[in-house]
Amino acid sequence: MRGYVVVEGHGETDAVQNLLTRLWHDLGLPYVHHWATPIRWNSLHRQEKLRAACNLIRGKGDADMLLILRDADLEDDCPKFRGPEAAAWVKDENLPFPVAVTLFHQEYETLFLASLPSLVGKDWQDDRGNARSGFPAPTAYDGDPEAIRGVKEWLSRQLPSGRGYKPTLDQLPLTRLLDFGLLRQSGLPCFGTLERSLHFLADQQGHAGSVYPTP
Image (cartoon, rainbow, N blue to C red; front, side, top):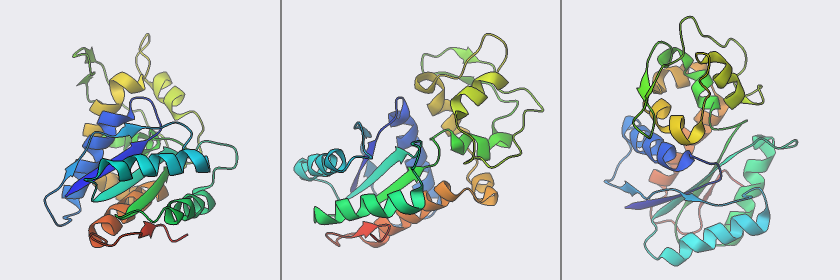
């Protein structure tokens, strides 16, 4: 079973592939499968761009499922409305495999805020192999992870002086440190949506035209 992923952000391709592979296994979902390297596609909030991305995957000829991930960081980007809206656009394409749409509100790094205790006090190597000093204790965030705009900037301010968070270098190693138990405990809505999306894709194998969430 081959799964495709379309993403929008810089640096998210390797991180998302790692996240999905680990989370699929953690959820105990059936079937042996492979997540292809995510494909970057600009402006997925626009109908014509999303439809074009869907048809690119249709043209691959070997897709068994598709997950569409994007940051919901625009002014009126409420996932409660934009998720079903995007699903309706996908539904109209009548793709020969199941598709799920997930919006990270406000951005991918929201996951790091909700799982911050699993990141504090741990060093990592960036994607260039350079040692990176981690978030010093007692770094903490007590607010709603989805309420903050500029999570990347917030993370940069918590790192040692002279160090800034860089998605292309730090996103993958920090993703490897994510604690799924903490994310579930946090009640982070976008993580719950991602888990439901994966369950949907597993349950709907072989069902052409099925889309999550319900348009």
